[in-house]
Image (cartoon, each protein chain N blue to C red):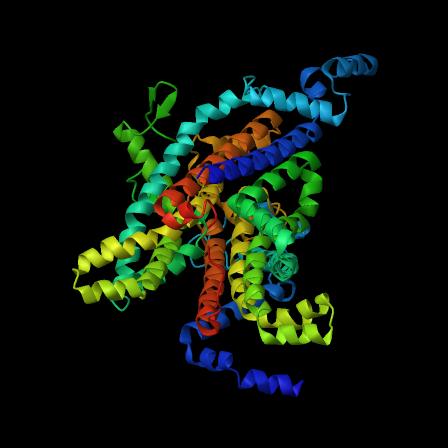
Length: 325
Length: 306
């Protein structure tokens, strides 16, 4: 387990190093910091002096090291647009995105497992056929189109649900939550459904095919022969081994999910990190772009490590082999 | 040539195709979309790229069967006064082109790296697969959004608009190589143990020739299966990027950018600017996915699984 952790940590470091390098080169190439600070009237000689003072003429490695030292302390520079530390601006929007991801994850979890298991147990029932047909349609509809269709149907045509924003929110410490008020929850419904729409069919299909494979195996036949109850075989013995690969795929999909929050947040004008990031791109707000990249990078690294850890805990073969799957 | 034709005519693939109604229907729809969109300069009633042919007075006209419709514009016009039908035909052509070329790039990169990883094994294999793992965990869309955003910010919008189509192909093409590499590697590992590979090695052929002429042909069925799915994914990624304003520009719209420009007007009731391109996009991706499903069932390759 320790060898596994060390290996994982090393990989996380490499990933963060690559992200920091990318971020730094963005900072280096996008726009001139002097132009952001000074007006047009400053002469070229004065600019050069200032460049020297600010260390902009230093060699690449020196500048990179300085950037890294600041970044580790959480100092990623001020956002050009908000005139405040970029990391602070991003972290303010962090809860909104996380609640959206949480909403979508809950939908996926509570729908995909029962439906997937049902479809595996009853492969010939009409419900399975409908679900399989719907899942291939679901996979073929891009997230932003699902979002637009949901808005058109539930906000414009029926007028049941709000189409943009987070609604009423409350502050718990630094965490701005929309999950404590009715208004906030109602606002969360459409964006979460839209975000879950592309993963849900994927997971239903995955769980179904894994479960069908597991049900063919010898130990399940043995369980039948032993006379165990159907429920016990399906939901205890088979489901356990079905969920193993699902955890791995889930870990990989979290990256995709974060990418899709950018799309969902844009359509619903959800005030989260993704929406902020796209605005920052349009305004060429470099420090904010970098802060987003680093925060997202940290999220990826943490989730991947956690998923691997859970996998190690659930699957004894990983533990025994000392981290080699 | 005739030999290959006979092989194809008697193949199990064609036989099962003839018996599968869904596959036949999907293929016909796909063929129709491809042919119509690639003939768009000939059959489209207007040229959406020609600013002289667009009249802003014609903007926002609903489809011709509605009351305020105009018989000149069958499917109505968008906010700039472009004929929806023509713009969509051209847009579909762009979407399909980007999808195909991006997958071509992915497959070349992925197949070469996958072959190398599987055949040589050892350190090369470990390094390439680690790289693939890391890249996959970042998700294509995320990588593409970041790269395109940075390029757009550093090139400026003007220059970017001219390069957009190449950038999209390049980014989607490079970001998805691990899909191919992992599949090819898995098949190579299985093939490598077989006797025919030992035989050609004993004859003394070079490793490049063994890989490309002897092992590669035997890994073609999984490649074919993932290629269909990958084309659908590439078209979806392109649409998503264009929808975010990071893809094709408004004056040369793909289906995604058309939906993006229509989305602003959906609240004011102009549903047709969004709905028609959206429908075409969904149908296009759906038929490709259905064909992919059918291919997977027929060829039944051992795809790479975690």
